[in-house]
Image 1 (cartoon, helix red, strand yellow):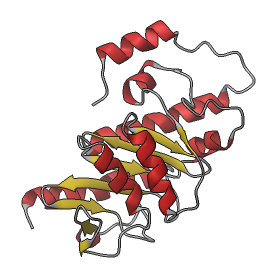
Image 2: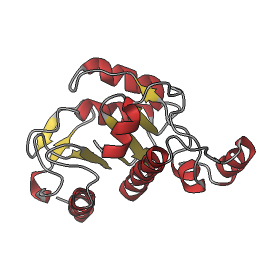
Image 3: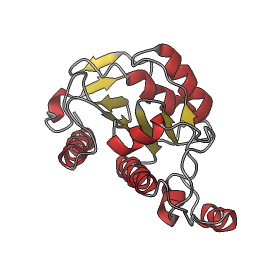
Length: 213
């Protein structure tokens, strides 16, 4: 095993534990993946993000076949779809984060862009957030649905399920996923109040100055 792969395995486990310890995921929910030169790493099925073993992470090829490690998350096809549609992605984070899931349950959302541009950093790290229709966990139709959105969006919100966020690196994907969850929390806290979100011109200016990679 290369030193680069060893470092990435450690980074995945450290990122996962940090997210678990701060309540961004719970139980055995959520999964994280990252690219290697000869495949990709994914957290194993049934594992808690708070107690991962770097040596037991699943290593897969680009057909989704297990090369080494424990059996992969049953949601591995979500990650594979994101990588195939967004080749520049270096990592993907999928969480069942409470506030993001709560937003995905609300009626009368704009499915093309679920959250308003409340903060500059939300616009800079997420941009726009489409709502992917509900499919049962493990349903391969969900992968097809993700593919339809992933070409234009690096962050998706799965209805009644949670966010899937890609990034150029593991840190970029994790930062964006956390920004999404923080904005979802703000959005819920402000329900029933008049919101002064960023204007379209302000949001467009941020997208031009800080393009998402």
